[in-house]
Length: 397
Image (cartoon, rainbow, N blue to C red; front, side):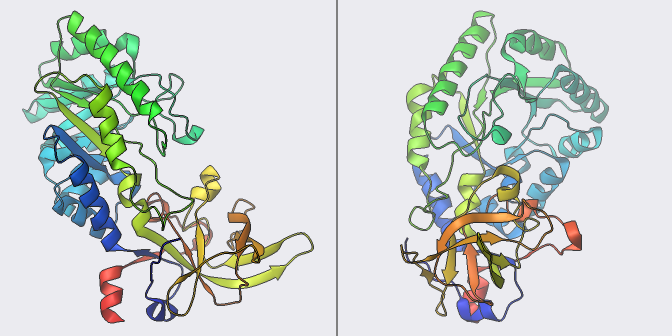
């Protein structure tokens, strides 16, 4: 475990639970992405806003020059408010409402990722009423297994997302027959938290086949969008805070047969923000059961729902008085780390080795920057967690 120091003195004075964002980690991550695509002028990265819509983080990502990948009208507006260029905003989602489509049309976004023929026709109708022509990309379901959790797999034929491969050509022809949409690309997304590059290789092979089919019918596109899905290290997040961006982009460079002048788009979310965020919580009680020893926290599933929803696990550290993460050892006690909600699924970890805990100890739940704060909710009338940032707290310390 690497040495990362939290502003513990300031933490002790603060109401828990709350999210703490280390902005230096975010900046290092953004720099690593830019470096990995430095030699690929035709690569464009869009940040997937659904991973974390915190306005402070969005503003930093926009300042770094990235685009935005949105899946609701609210996310389109949040991206615009944060300073993302409308010309770098793509909008996906299987159920865009008329109101949401109009928001995006009026903003003049770059492209809609269209997931069905009825949606294509509605966008055409609404664009005509606005007197504009909307860029669209057809989201094709490539039936590629991402080998990830079933609830975050999106590229299989059984999933609700995208247009079936066998319907690509007739859908493309339908788009070409409409007057107020312009089909500029193909879009794909196979899932999330993908750690092995093999799934992306299979996606490249499928896209190559589909492009050949499209061109054989006399059609071509300017843009290919491969979605996102790159995973992060939830087991050793402090030792490996930067995901495998180089291997990820190199995989597409090696295996995807782009045509001259085509632009390749990526939609990265989790890999951009996961490791900069930590959920900070206090131990309320240590409960010695006959079978289990429980560390009962003031944080719960309403603050970080991933463990309850997906069965996921986050690394958890005890913070000492200096803000250091106390390393675990074989001599540690074993705890089920749980929250106070009256649901048996309100569990962050089971049988987790931790140093001896006491009431009032501070714990950090790591890798919480993605699908943490943005998915918080108010069950049991609990307030939403606050967010604090490294530059502010360290300046106050």
